Length: 282
Image 1: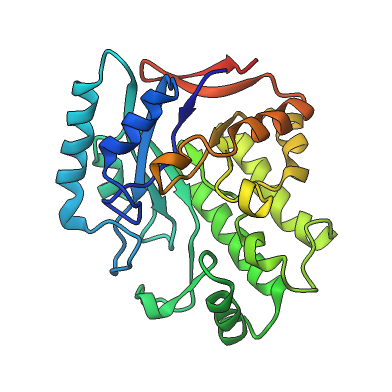
Image 2: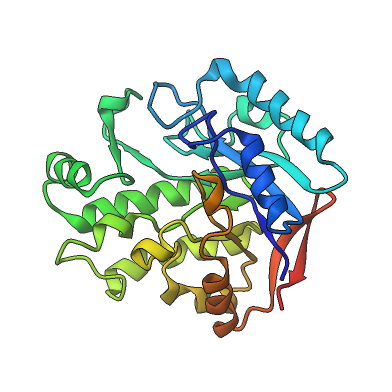
C-alpha cells in the first residue's frame, strides 16, 4: 500500500502540533510522501486560518523539513485556500505567486454580504449549533437555498481555477443532513452537485476522498454514494485525512481504499518527485 497524505494542518493554522511531529509520525508508519496544507490567510482573522504575517515562516519551515528528511520522505508545501468570491480565491495573484507544490481549493464560508468580514460569513463547517443558528438567520430555514449557494460557490471556484485538488467537495452535507428536508438522494440535490463533478472532469482537476470524519461519524467527502460516479467520470482521486493531530495522519485510509476498490478504482493520484501520477494501491 502506498502511504501518503496531502491534506494536513499544523500549528501555523488550527492544527494541534508542530509540522515536524507530523513528519515523524509519517516516517514511523512508512509513508512515502507527505504534504502540508495549512488554511490560507483570509481577509479577516479567524481561529483556524494562518495569519498573512506567518506565511514566510511557514514556507521556510516546510522547506527546512524538506531538506532535513529528503532522503527518507518526499515532503510537499501547499495551502488549503478558501473560495470566498471572485475577488478572494485560489486564483488571485497572491496565491498563484507563492512557491507552492500544489493548491487545495475548499469552501468553508458562504458570504452573505459583499463586505468580506467574519460577521458576514456563514460557516458550513464546525459545530451544528453555530450552523443551525446561521442557517435560520441567513437562509430562513431553507436547506435547498443553502445547498444551492454552496454548490454555486463550488462551481465558481472550479471555474476560476488556480487549484489542483478540490477539497471535501460536498462538506455541506456534514451538518445539512441533520435537517429533515435534506437528502443526498433527492433529485434537487443531485442536480446541484453533479454539475460540479462534471466541471471538475472538464477542467482535469483531482478530488480528494477526505476521511477526517470517517471513523467518528461514518462520513467521507464526497459521500461514499458518489464515489462510483467519480470512477464513471474518470476523475482522479487521492485519500487525504485532513488531519489536525499527528496520530491521525493515516486515519481512515484502509476504509477509504476499500470504498474506492468497491467502486472500481485501482489507482490513486500521487506526487512522485513533484509530478502527479496514477499509482496502484493494491
